Length: 127
Image 1 (cartoon, helix red, strand yellow):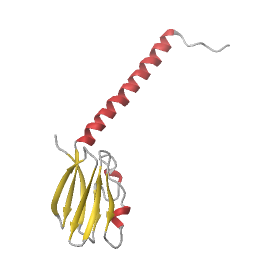
Image 2 (cartoon, rainbow, N blue to C red; image 1 turned 90 degrees about the vertical axis):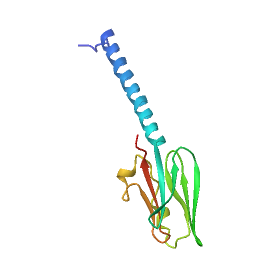
Image 3 (cartoon, rainbow, N blue to C red; image 1 turned 60 degrees about the vertical axis):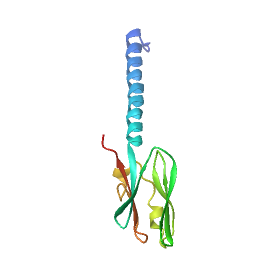
Image 4 (cartoon, rainbow, N blue to C red; image 1 turned 120 degrees about the vertical axis):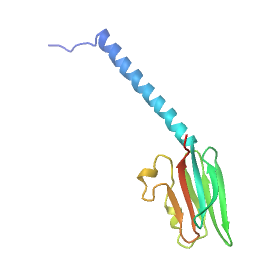
């Protein structure tokens, strides 16, 4: 018995499956983009809300508390602690938070700088 060549019906099924797959990926990326755009960061000092920052634009927020400081980079993809005056630098090693990775991080949707009493939370905006 020889190899069977793909007939017209099989080709149509394959094309339909590929079309549905590409459409699903495109639709999923649109939904994910809307989730990123609707997220924002809440920055706290001593457990009091200091500032809310949208994740729509790239920006660096500098939090100054006396002679101490924290620099927080906010972008449409993530929030990360760029620089801090604390002695242990643990907050800088906590990595970036994205709306998608928060559920997989040890600290969830938080970056915490205990010595400077600065915390950053990434939250999705309620529609």
